[in-house]
Amino acid sequence: MKYIAVFDIGTTSIKGVLLDKHADLKGPYSVLLETYTGPDGNVEQDPLDWWKGVKEMAWKWWNELDIDPHHISMITFAGQMEDVIPIADDVSRAILYSDTRASEEAEWINQKFPTIHEILGNTVSASTPVAKLRWLEKHNLSLYQNTPHFVFSAKDFIIYKMTNSVVTDPTTGATTGMMNLKKRQWEKRIIESIGIEETKLPKLLNAENIAGYLSKDAASETGFCENTPVLCGCGDAGASSVGASAVDQGDSYFYIGTTGWAAIIREGVKEDSEINGLFHLAHLPNDSTISIAPLLNVGNVHRWAVRTFTGSENTDRYDAFENLLKTSKAGSNGLLFLPYLHGERCPVRDSDARGAFWGIGPNTEDSDFARAVIEGISFALKQLIDLLNDNTSGNITLIGGGSKSESWCQILADCIGKPIRVPFESEYMPALGASSSAFIKLGWAKDYSDFSRHFIMSADASVYRPNMDNFVKYKEIYNRYLKMYPALKGIYS
Image (cartoon, rainbow, N blue to C red; front, side):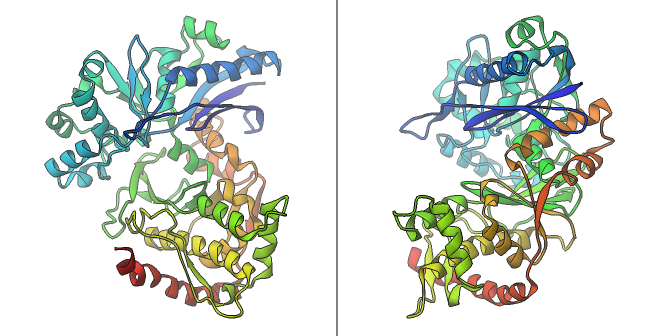
């Protein structure tokens, strides 16, 4: 039996899994990660913890599952993006995407290049690696000068440890503030003007390109066979998109975690000036992009509602909340909810915005509050998909922890008016998506569309089909929902 080894290096944990040529999962393991935070917006991780986690899972495959390392045909990856990771003899902590220390540097770059988004496809913020590199130059010059190379995804560090190659992929490159999205090349003019040395940047490779072969030292540490091919792999957004079967133009999906996003696949790059906070990323298929609209208020608001509207006597609050949702009918008895508990970043960018209920009457019940919350989050997701949509038909898939709520899935389908597919084992969908590059390289799939048809769309899933009576009702309610933030904006400010 031949396997592909896949490592998905996230922020909270690393997941590892083996897949055979039928995309059957074997030996799924995970290792939790520690994050270091500081008072000035510092958010860092030790890259050696990633390496330790990879080695731990590999040895479990050999020793607990009795897998023969000679049966591993290829290794590939997905990884968190927008990091700044020094590649040097002395390993320093990685600066993670959520680190906010480079806000002044980001502002300086945007002032110097006011049309930078036209080249990069994205604006520059404190989370963007180019701003963090400039911050390092100003605040830790010795580290910057003594570091031969930097990489920008956690998986890139593991590739270096395995092969001594310094590479990254175009999906990750699109988040750095230094890659021309249309050409998928480093933008030398911007890099040089900002003062970044291009020699410090990794080589750009497609996800299915071989980054190198496992070194003798790495083989000794991990138990993999020396010279096992190691692919470049992709940033987590690319892997999640393929794992959600969003491969062809018009395919779209929702991710519902603590925060979340809506994404749609497009050919080329389309300017979306009306959507504040939109990201454009290079997708794994060439000449296509992932347009991502992020939300701050998704699973975190769901948890708040579960805590608020279920009594402390309930041993399983999520089940109790599900029952509340089923008790109230579509429209929540006239109650509307704006889910901006934590401010919002798309389609409006307003950190002062807050949540609000409207329409409370003498007959309003607890169940109406519960359902209004989920309808409000669903309307927010609908707003994003409506703004992103190019009037094309395609698959809509839902992944993430929120997909465990059957009532929420049905409400979302009713709001959107299209079937929503929820795959089983969605936790490992990004790892399955990351394996696609290896399937193509090994000839187990013709291309990404073929992989999606045979291994994603054919996988076990639940399909929630819209109740069209509810859809008609929600269309009218949605129009009222869209008026809530503009009406309340004066109160926030």
